[in-house]
Length: 71
Image (cartoon, rainbow, N blue to C red; front, top):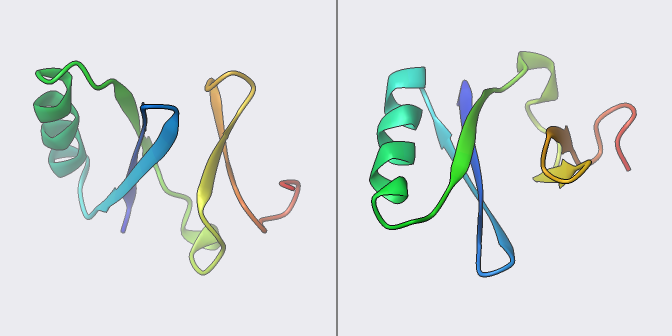
């Protein structure tokens, strides 16, 4: 999983992992047609094995639970 899609649906965080940026962007485009908005981000290799992604700072940044510097 090299790319993460992160979005919000009914006040819940939606995350999905993808092997390529193109696959992630395709998923993003499909959801936007249903009025569900999110973003694709590059997943840092050193965070594999940590917890779930969480949104911080009003959705402008991402933090992986359990990673250094993240609650």
